[in-house]
Length: 384
Image (cartoon, rainbow, N blue to C red; front, side, top):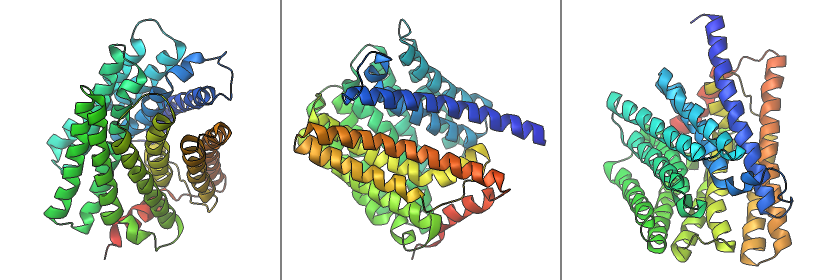
């Protein structure tokens, strides 16, 4: 490819990323409405579709874009495009089921991408991620038939959890884990997937079973993920490891909450059950992988800076405030402040990430290969 062709490809990816950010900002706006901080006078649809906007419109676009980059097939880019356009349709209040239909299509295209990858190079980690894509498809179908978001919220969590677990399983291959060790994770994944399936018919027992699966996955990741060793290193490798390990703690918290409650009715328990997963686990994973994913997708360097610890620390401290002071104790003010600071952490992440990219471009830094290789080699080469 010539330089101009590479530039056009980077521009197309950047436009898809921009659409994902629109879904993110709309989801954050809707979150403030749900927190009672904003009066629901403008963009009420952002609060009604808060979960799908964040999980599918924003994170779904990012996940499917990364898969399209890895697959290198033109049709795979239709998945992030459909995911972002589906979020815009839901946000605009488009008549009919256009938004849910586009999100379901996006999930089906992501599943097709994983099936293609599985046919090209069969692997356990890709099969686990394929289950995540199936969970997205199921969530889209439930939304398409008109059910409330709380009805398919566990499936939204299942999509992201299984995608991330599959990615971490891929990285542990270099550690040459025994078949018995890998089978432990597969059992936890199977229990989690079974719980999600049962929840469609019987919510409470299904969510409880899925919670047991979450606990199993969290325990396996905390014990066998390479982050346990790379946390002793320095720089970006240490930052990534700390973000990963903190995320595993919140995944375990979510597992306990799901297993004890089993109900997805609106209220403090519902708030804690979902945000322990989506904020504590998933957003911590986003923070951890950004130094690798941004250069790989946009072909732009993202040099690590110690300031990145600011949004990581704020995310976890504010989530603890929200769940412990708000949901557990029942203090509405602490719950609101926790939610506001959650969103502040995400915005700070965006600001610091964009600033690092722009600063690197201004100073002529060409650290794309170095930063990517450093992050991967740090996780993969130090394991015993």
